[in-house]
Amino acid sequence: MRLGTKIAVAFLLLSVLPLAGITLYSYQASISAFRKAVEAESGTLAEEMGGRMAALRGDLSTRVARLESALREARKKGIHEMLVCIEEENRRHRGAIEPMDDATMLILKIGPS
Image (tube, rainbow, N blue to C red; front, side):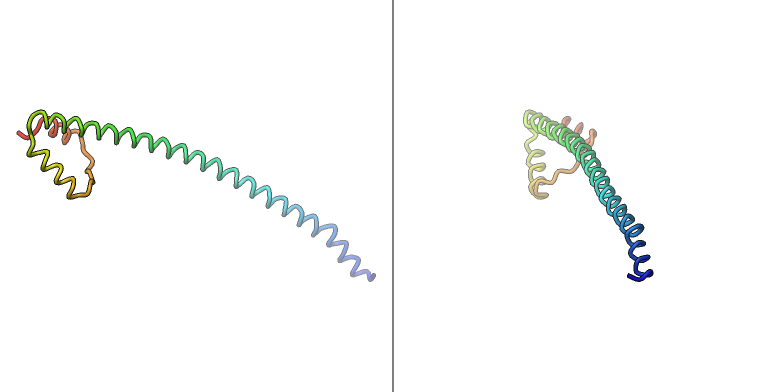
């Protein structure tokens, strides 16, 4: 073998191959660390979304209970016309119920003046 070829092979064996090995190892380590970070973040986000969903379920249950109570009170007081109007409006909007604030609930509980 000529000297130039020997130098090229030595350069390849002593610098390029170890550098390629280190690069591949670093790449694999980075992928592993990234996957672990994504898994941890996904778990955190899933827990956070679960908490939000529980809060929304609780809020919705409270609102439905208030509405049921108001409707029961209205039936007891004989406000049939108001109930028919509410039910027709609900059917017209295909079940969509607007968010109610406390003032609206108070009006529903007291009835029309």
